[in-house]
Image 1: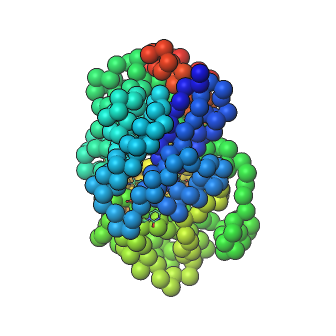
Image 2: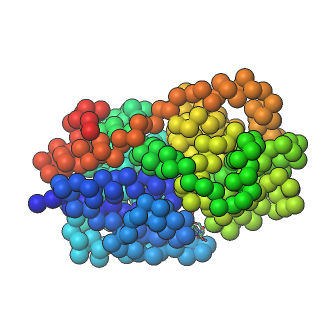
Image 3: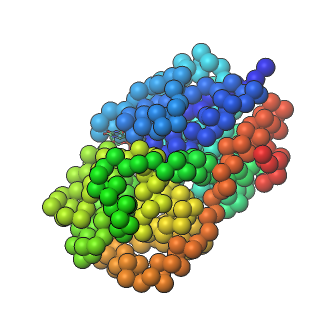
Length: 384
Ligand code: UD1
Ligand code: UDP
């Protein structure tokens, strides 16, 4: 009998990071995969499922505009419980630190179904940043039966909190699996301005922003900083695929109105966005996933946050924390635009997040669920 493994996800980054696992489960005779989306995101989630050819078995369709954290949590909990009752999976995989992820973990835990936490053990050490993600992932760690840690740093965080070593397996981050597969396709850009800029080798500054703790004044400052940088460097093309959240758009976009060398797009399909990251001269972002992906592509990232739960690339030198102060952002971007040696030093950093085999390693760890021995030590046993 195959092991019945349900994967639950709801937002764009979870979808990207779960896709390699969903695919690996579907390809393995040892498993029967069940895919559930909560629909915490709608368009941004569907875009990813479409790219990877995933048709979910269940869609809780919870998204509403202006949704609250408790509202998401309550709808996921209430929506998932009957699905768990009907499907009776042997294990439930949740990914990362979104509200979908923690609510799904709680729903499975309440039905005494083992929770497998993909991308376990990330810690910023600050409950307020990122908010609510640091709290979400710590809650999930309390009730998970198997912790799939992307790096030895995340494994050590879990060990320090008392998680038994045999419940942790270091797998690498599945985002690298998704990225390597997707970027290799070199998909064309639909937007003619992007296609032309890449064709002629124009310098690109790619910007993404959405973090909840940056909403409001900090994000308005980010908008002003981008406008100043663009005006100061007319040779540069700034590309900002805008998050669908209206709160984000209202804060960041007004300052960019009428700035000729800023292109604001809808969220780009992952194929185009991954290629854009590879072609970019520099990325300015508060995204978690982008911090993991860009080092694999040799593109420096300035992170608009004061803390990060992803210290590995900072240590490797590819990623630098610059906070959200307008002046500091302008200074740090300007330095990298004007100083080729400083840029080259960051671009030469190594990628600490994986080699594209994290999904296969995760499946090896999952096989142990049947025997009651899910992991076999901090980084052993998960060889593909
Ligand atoms: C969520 C996650 C965050 C993750 C981010 C990735 C939580 C608490 N937050 O934050 O951890 O980093 O996703 O992007 O789980 N919207 C749409 N269409 C979409 C997606 C969003 O219209 O496809 C709008 C809706 O109005 C929605 C709002 O954006 O109410 C906010 O979405 P939500 O998932 O609550 O928060 P994010 O900031 O996206
Ligand atoms: N991404 C994308 N299209 C875009 C912007 C980002 O496909 O227009 C991808 C990006 O490559 C990364 C993920 O979305 O894999 C990150 O999502 P987000 O920044 O929304 O969430 P976070 O990683 O911060 O939780």
